[in-house]
Image (cartoon, rainbow, N blue to C red; front, side):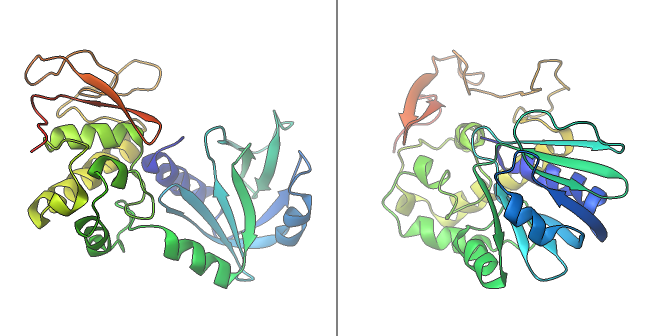
Length: 260
């Protein structure tokens, strides 16, 4: 599933393609045909990300809500457009660009009340300027759930995914099983600030890069991580432990991240 930096990068890119422009909306696959008709030929007023959710606002106060899930993809190109490839749920055409959305987990039209409800259940997004970290700290400091689970709960903090979760906890020397109510304000501020910095790097470089001073990678996905999917810890050279948190694989160094 794409992590928050991917959705924010898509929002930045597609904002230049669609915002403040009349947009032709269709559903080549057919599964969103009724919704596409409601939005077709309207002006897209903005494109913005809330965690892992992408919102296209239109001039009639309705919004298109997209959540890619595990298999969804965005495909963008300059016009002229080509024939749709694969199961294109939504195609949006401005005068200059074509945006195709394939296989999203969620694809729906929201009225203002529906959009407000959605945004209200999403935690503060570390990449948004209007994020309120106090909301996240209030939830974490009152919870006995492990911090490794809380960081992946999008209603607590939005945008952090599985790889960032592992890497942030290692960088902060925190065991993923530490209960949320054991995280004091200084610890929380370190987690929050590190998350902001790392995801901003992800937006800029279009890759998850958590190694300080890492040079660009020529690997397929460009990832540069410290312990995620690694055998040894770069700090102590000890073995990295692989575990599962809520069904998702996670990694930790028992030496550098002791459970206090």
